[in-house]
Image (cartoon, rainbow, N blue to C red; front, side, top):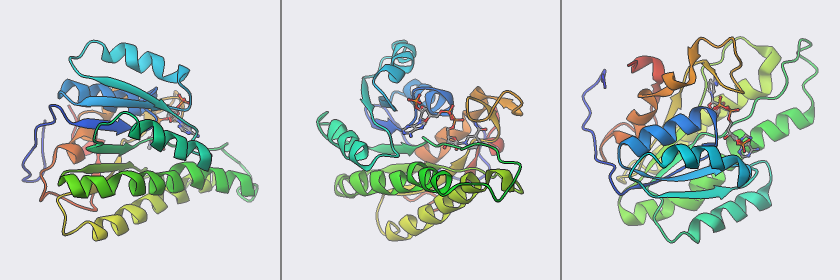
Length: 239
Ligand SMILES: NC(=O)c1ccc[n+]([C@@H]2O[C@H](COP(=O)([O-])OP(=O)(O)OC[C@H]3O[C@@H](n4cnc5c(N)ncnc54)[C@H](OP(=O)(O)O)[C@@H]3O)[C@@H](O)[C@H]2O)c1
């Protein structure tokens, strides 16, 4: 794993990671990458059914796996998801806020609906904020925690404005939470996977979904005094 700066890497064996949107796409790759490092994985998708494929893939690794579900656009389901995780009676050491949505590409840039804006912000930003609020306090108590928020460097695409703006909000939210965590060993950073072939990225994307690794793992592997509120990208850490 190539690093462009001097950071110590930690061991993940026996740590537990909740990865939102790990039923497919980039989140599934992150789940595989963390399982390869010995990390137990809490798989999340919108439904129990959608988690099955990732759970099957993870059988290959000697780690514990758990399944939780819920639609992050729905505040009640976010609460239920937090309850499902609490009921597992394990610590959440790593929170990977990966789930995200992008609404329709609109040639007429003024035709994004209020619903497009609200649902995009609910899933991409508000749910992230709620999950941070649910799990960061116990990370501080346990003196260990890593949070990674998935962003995008999407630029100059007003046809996808609600998505682009929501990702800039992700960056700002991450920086604000990082400031609140600066005197703790808990680290929060944001990560851009690059344009990848997934259901969201589409088939014309530049790279296969596997290109999310190993870069996606770096902001998890950093030490307690490592970067906080910083930007990471998969393109910096190519295989
Ligand atoms: N692909 C790219 O080119 C690219 C580039 C930059 C950033 N990103 C970001 O990377 C992240 C993952 O993207 P991806 O390309 O892997 O997307 P994807 O293939 O569409 O997968 C989306 C994942 O999020 C879950 N999800 C979708 N809507 C949800 C909702 N309302 N509530 C809860 N979970 C929901 C899905 O669960 P189900 O399977 O149950 O539907 C699935 O696990 C996103 O934040 C995206 O913005 C992607």
